[in-house]
Image (cartoon, rainbow, N blue to C red; front, side, top):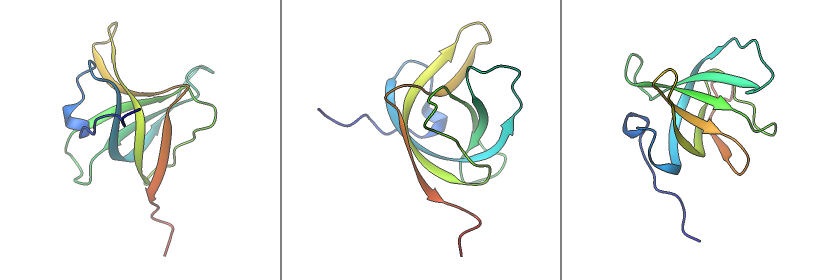
Length: 103
């Protein structure tokens, strides 16, 4: 099985299926639901540049504000809000590559 294609977060358009990307968690968005269990805003390394919503449905994944990750997730379009998202559900993964608290 081949690995998913790598896309920068500014290349997500909701049509690519399973992809690999890299981004930082800028902040967590409060949710009033149990599904998804987490919603965060992702950004690249330059503040003010492209941001994307990331929804976490996978109970084995919890993202931390300020940390950088490599993601294996779904390039998703939420039709009701016309919002492009990175969706972390069953079969997805993360790898932390930066933690501001590490010395």
